[in-house]
Length: 92
Image (cartoon, rainbow, N blue to C red; front, side, top):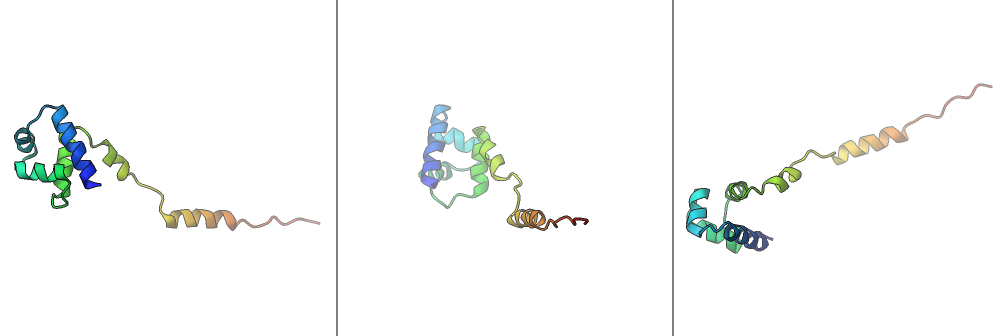
């Protein structure tokens, strides 16, 4: 997965006609770090990746990752509440 992400990063950098040195300067890291990112090495900090995505205006997918979702406990409670309905009493 990281190698695929690294290849995409390289492609995006080249589409912007940024050299590795220019991109590294914008990112605030060394060229060696950018090279490690593009190679998909797991040694690069997540913050560096997020900054790179921000520079490339590609952080939208991260927003979807962090959306609040219904927990399994909430689902179980909702299901339980539905199944606890009592039958109505009939009057004779």
